[in-house]
Length: 79
Image (tube, rainbow, N blue to C red):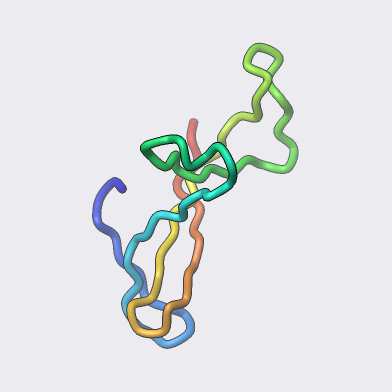
């Protein structure tokens, strides 16, 4: 992950460290890397050229070292 960012847990005020959420769906385990999670905006439409939705940004996951809470945060929106 780009830069080691930590956050404070909303549950217990502990330190939250970056983690990677792994996709264990059939077929996904064949890949040697985990693609980052992304999000899109509700009004986005499928691209005529690629057949895919545009990505509005990356989803970053953090886990609290004290209580184990996992939180997802939206990264900066892509231009």
